[in-house]
Length: 326
Image 1 (cartoon, rainbow, N blue to C red):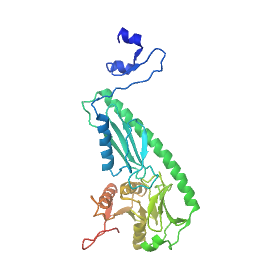
Image 2: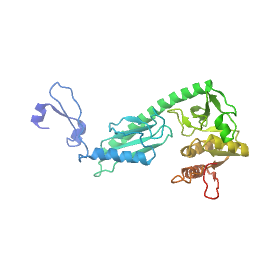
Image 3: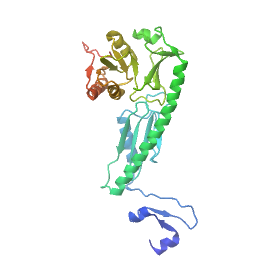
Image 4: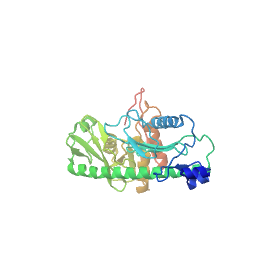
């Protein structure tokens, strides 16, 4: 540091000294000291390009924002509404850091999925830059976990209150009549069927609401990953499927215990939880046929779940090109 810099009140931090003055704090004598972080790669538009790349990654994972989203690279957790989710919900989230290279994570509280993202390095990173990025992502994960636990705790409390207020459902509900299935362990709150989503230990985490018209939604912020709705007592074999109506049909037809995972993305996680709880059971994953959806997620996720637990896949077979659900 020069004599002129000292006279002007330039203070060099230990990090700056180690990085050949890449970081300095500039202040007048007696003034409030504010840190200044120069960009690691000052190419024009680099941050804008990074935010656009992250948005593309978010969309590619099926977590597209419901409206235009300006990503903020401040290292904090931000929440947003996912396209197709109900108004007012904020199940989507992201964390974005700008330095030493734009990087972060994103996901959905509803599905429990988490994805990481990083822009390619413009030049080979130094060990210090790699360590800085590692610490940032670690801090982002801790913040994300804390936020998720707080939101899920609130959902657990609300789910318990609603479940206790509701009364046992009967077979006369319009949705059940239309699907020709009975009410097995369901409850009714006003005109909404309540389906309990519990973990393998039996803890109630969230609820699925099914209206008379068949519209379905979940309690905002509730944990879904690894949670399921159970029918019957496991005895030799257990069937795993996506929806309540499918599960009730399977239970009636076979007499076997059934676990309803609520969506195909949850099938592998629920399958692992069931295998840990029932190591000797035969597990059959009953797939929804999504042949008209690119990638057929109903079948592919069922296959993934079966592979994870040494189970088998049961899928519907249609003739004449007709496809649907079990």
